[in-house]
Amino acid sequence: MTGEAVALPWRVLPDYRCFGCSPANEQGLRLSFTRTEEGIACAFRFDRRHESYPGVVHGGLSSTVCDEIMGNLLVLRTGVSVFTTSLRTRFVGPLAVGADYRCLARTDAVAGAPGPYQASADIVDGEGRVLVFASGSYQPVSAEQARARMDLTDQEARLVQQALAGLRSSD
Amino acid sequence: MGTSTITLEEIIGTVAGLIAAEFGRDDGQLAPDLDLTAVEGADSVKVLRAVARIERTYDIELEDEQVFGFKTIRDVATAVSGLIAEQDG
Image 1: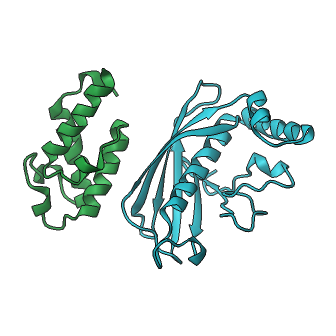
Image 2: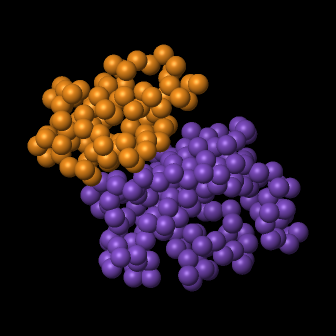
Image 3: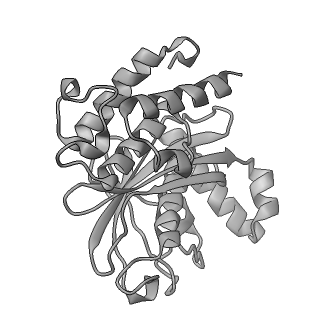
């Protein structure tokens, strides 16, 4: 349902510290997502901790937001972990510190299809003007590959796999 | 998209539409060889936004040196056509 808050599968891990989306990471962006007709969206406002030039948000953080939302959208859509293989960002205008923005992501990826998956994301200002256009490619990994790449206990790995399996069976 | 059979004229039409939308104009008001920098209300931000939409439409990546050198819709379409041809091998 459009506007509905999205529950990310990683929340099953009590010590999850994703820089992009974990509420427990005090240095992170703490992004939260809602459903849209096309995919998911997030709202954010950067402060002086995120500056490059005075009053201007560091462009790398715009890329981070886009990567975060696209990656999460693909996980939600496909029910598997994905790793970014390429990220393309075109900056049309700078983001201002203290201003409100939204990032919207979409993908045509379907669960079970072979990778890489493609997704795109836009950062828009309060008037709906797109300031950042991003697209990315993401490679799905098997549970074994994910386990080998991540620092998880056996129990944590099981919790994540159960959460991902729930996504695959929910649509 | 059947990029292997797409013509330059088709690309010109699509590019003109995307640029016109960013400029707030009707397609027919922007001739392929019109100097875009001379269009009232046009600015580099609008051109860049249109380029981003064009790149997304064709799943291509234009070089910045090309982008900042574009003068006309035909310039843009020609660059797009070249990239599509490269992708098709």
